[in-house]
Image (cartoon, rainbow, N blue to C red; front, side, top):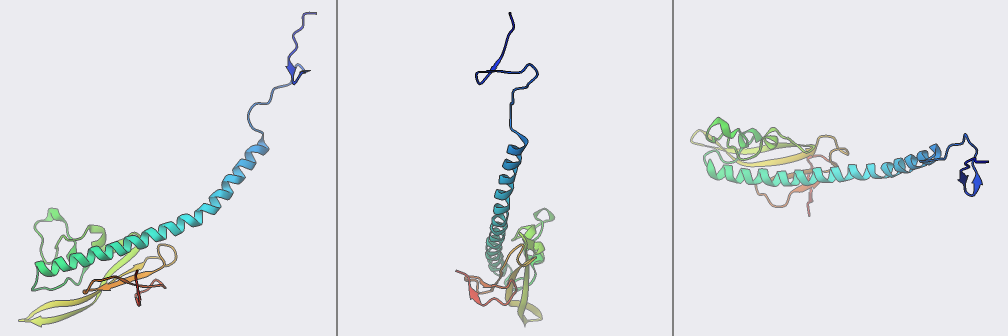
Length: 179
């Protein structure tokens, strides 16, 4: 007899059987379940990291706007500070800077929206000298667009600069010093 026989683990293999190659369905389902569990554990961490990044961006944006206000006040002393973010912004291709378009902050900050936060200049105090209003003070606020989702805290500063204060509830009642 000249018959070929294949061996599987030292035993003859039936003629029609197929050798297993790859993973079984059960093994694949177990791997997918493990990956899903790991993803479910990582998703909340990603959300917290995103909120923290938005808050850091808001603090840095407050500092940039405060610096722009100082520069605006020294460039246009008759006007004092700006009372609108649009006046601090402006398109450089539209011509030279003016008090209404000082070109001191980027367009996203001038629009009042950046990284999940809404920025506003409020509580502008002014004096009138020779019929011209001069802004002598302001309050700058940054509040989350969606409290708990884009950020947890609101931030505030004023014309004196210094360290911004924050409101732990995400509003503009800033009483706690940022450290």
